[in-house]
Length: 198
Ligand code: GLN
Image (cartoon, rainbow, N blue to C red; front, side):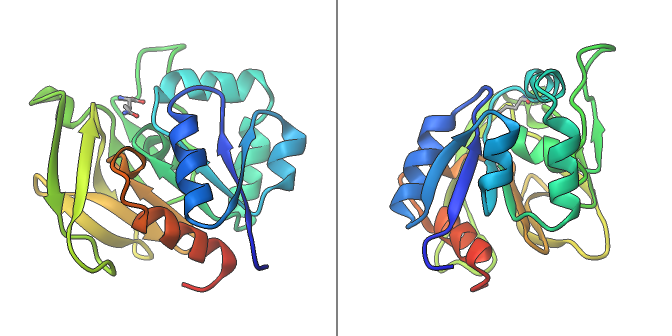
């Protein structure tokens, strides 16, 4: 696969920034709103936004189970912030009854929703990221953190004593928003994951 076709789940959230970042990183980027589009992509980005709203839209549009199945079959995926929450196998503080964030089971991990928000809503800082040269500017907006990872999960970055970037096989997740900084190294890395180069 020379130029991979990578979808951005476009139900809600900061879809446009990811489409632009993926294009700059060398992918053919397309929004995904329906089943036929999900079936057509080689990889999928789940953007930041509101994980409870995205969960309910996924369910209403009958995309929740098809997406879980594609992930179980090895679809490469990258989730940022709300996307990280959805890719988890277990979500703490998932929301009130009937308005809950629903796990997609892409990575064997437990995340806590709005974890940083209890201290400070939004902040940014430079953090080390395993496998990348030089620090990454990490923008956290009502971000989750990771409280438990399974044996096959690699922790790539930490902040406030918690994992904030993780990878398991072809699935990557960050609690922060690289699409907002102009630094395309994480998107480029994901494109390379989709083509099987890393
Ligand atoms: N707090 C949001 C949620 O629970 C995530 C925020 C974000 O994606 N920037 O889904």
